[in-house]
Length: 110
Image (tube, rainbow, N blue to C red):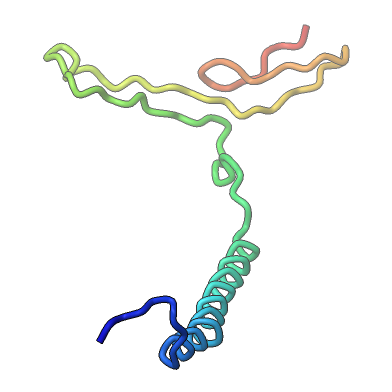
């Protein structure tokens, strides 16, 4: 028996009906349901803002370590960086000052 790929048979008709009326709608329904669940999940998740859980005025960030450690460096304490909150204070003359320094205090008004 010789196989002919350009001839319409009842097998090809059944395959076309299955693909067009069963497989495509089932995949479309699944993808639509997944999209809807993802959309609901995103809508119910509160937005994440930077530093939303920090209640103190300063944030301490550790400096990442390198792979090479010298014997003199192993005894030293790891240095830290301090990041102050981005607040501004209105001075009586109308200018603004920001927080600076290791204690994150406002600079004096001019």
